[in-house]
Image (cartoon, rainbow, N blue to C red; front, side):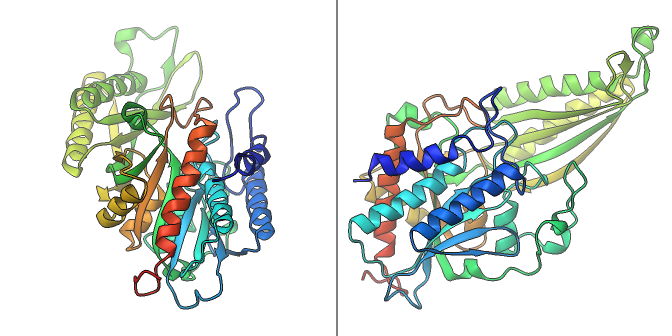
Length: 406
């Protein structure tokens, strides 16, 4: 059994890093103080376990366990990320990294003799909170995003990604692996409904981000009659309500969570409002229909308001199914654990799309709340997650390079 004190000790080490005294949430923006401290913590934890840590040109870390006799065999990867959204929760990302280290301890305690190497990965800029591209580290490492494009990404303070990491061509460390299993706190309530502590991922809903720029006319908030205004805020406000209604009716997801207003004065009608739509749906067709419907209503409203609307897609990830055989195998190893899709994007989806056989394990979230200081998982369920990850890894590591059971 995994020892509770191992997991709890690591969790205690992480708890204060990047935490807001005001909200209790976390700000672990990539390549800033808190996230850099977490990287140092991971290196220390890996070193204490005798693991060799590599950092690729894009800031991804991987700690390798290469027992004798595993030379030449394709590796199994696990892990997650350590960065957070602004004022995010404690579990999204770090739970997968801590659980991977704890699962390794468990395998060693059980005397598992792997036929394959094991890598514990920490992917950089998974949330996209600093440079606006979700899963950026895994996309760069897998070659699905090119460095010539990514190097010019700029954060809110004007810092280029190319000034933070060396970049260049992928160094090939991902090619050493053919399987990836990522443990993550569930970002929903499916496991609560099923009465299960741990589940296995089947797919990631298609999702994307769209920027809505609405142009109007700056004016005085007091002297300008309501009927004389060209107010872009009205167009955005009605679009937000329309998106909510469209998503509710169709059973999909649509969120405007970020807004920028210019000139952003209390006593001024704005001249421009920019808003970002996050949309997710159960299929590519459903997503296309949802996004088209929201844009259509936004344009109709802009025409009534006299404003100008510009819409640009900033990212789009299509429907993705995890490897069905691996998913079924993990569920069987865990005694028939429930299999469920996720509406959130993950590095596991990027790796699956890049040809690395992937799936996920989810740990029950009692409220379903995520990307929030209220995000939570019970200690007992986290320990069950470590046990589950350990069992899955033990099963996968028992295969040689040709897939035969050792």
